[in-house]
Length: 70
Image (cartoon, rainbow, N blue to C red; front, top):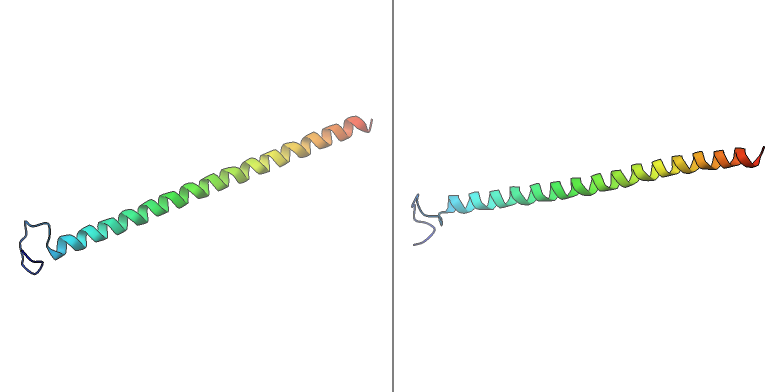
């Protein structure tokens, strides 16, 4: 059986191959988008944690500065 023959039940027709390729391409795009979104959320959480830590360090510094300048 060749690809030029039209058999609607056969999984080797050209249309089904195109459908499989497009579904695989869509699946790969979805996986890449999901992975990049996950990496961006990790980066954003690390950035927020760094800002929070810097804020607390500034508060501690001003607190100890007031203690030592009494």
